[in-house]
Length: 275
Length: 254
Image (tube, rainbow over all chains, first blue to last red; front, top):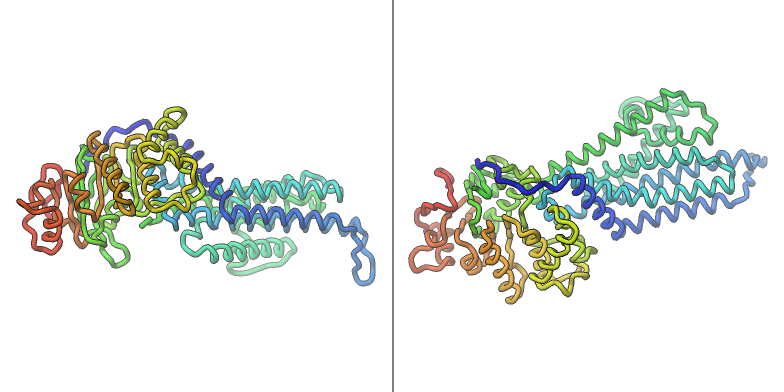
């Protein structure tokens, strides 16, 4: 085999990543799914606005519940649901972020440049994730503001929920992107929705004292702790006392899952045969 | 210096053998026409060189490096058979990104983009979106991005496909200009007359194997056209492969 030819100064991978991530962001922004995620964020915000503007007059078993109590329970529930909805929306955008350039063949022209597949995969993930987090983060900030102004909720837990949302969106987006290379987009979207629901149900049921066996127990114990982390993030609103080691454990699991899901995506792209 | 090399390369897609023990080494500065019937393995050979697919058996080197190494593609231009670009990007925006990926920036990048837009007749369309363009215009955009930075190696897959007669002539001029600048060319094509005009060497693939290779003058026997030679070789009426100082297929390749 021949000796290497002299090469020009190499384009820095960080610059390549930056350029391609911006392109992926613009690509997602201009796509229908970009509009869809913006719509999801607006819908979530509209939902929060309507819910927080209602005067509480909840009647249970013929008795009127203390409006303050129902608001304290309803606020976190509402914020948690909106956060999970936006995590699912990030999976929707990601399901298209890599599958489309592969399907239409434009990926071949990017990879014909001095671009490694690792950088390409991470750039597509970063670009689509940036759009999701911009839309979702904006909706969460606005929702937190409404809860604060109208219901007197403190802002600190909302900040933690925002961080958990960003971490969860990163995990879900990377896994959705990897899966989209093997199955049609509609299957990816349904799989992501189902998977998020299973994990959240398992996490919350476990926190409420339920015990599981088999794969469901493994999912709760070793899967990405989307529900648990969300619950912990809202502990300030729920008056929960958390042990430091529980919090550290959940943060570590989130970090490990961000790494694992990104690695799975990179591995999938590196193995991809582009006929 | 070898520009690219396929050493004992076979490529299987499922049970189908797209390439079968292909040996090919092309020196820098050579213009090679890659010919063969549909399904002969031409596009697969190009995609192997770009690292888009991996060989099932054998080794591939691009400028002495594995195609998995991004540095192997630092001075490479590629025109695919069916160019596809993000449809909502404007032509100038697309070229700016491709230029950035090869290390150009600032005024040098803008100057280079202007030059390529003028060369490919796209200057007036620089701010149009790529989506919805005709096949011929897409092919011009593909050439514009491939020629950015005057790469040492050009891989062209059916470069005149979809072009009108004026476009074909323009494409031929761009290819000949690159050849005159001493660039290495690999042109996969069904249009034998274009290959005859633009390349000095040919490789004829048939059923995944190299059926003939060498300088054009040696593959084409006295008095016959490249088309006659092609038909003769593909139909198995061929003569022994002529020795070639430029494009070599080591013993045992066929």
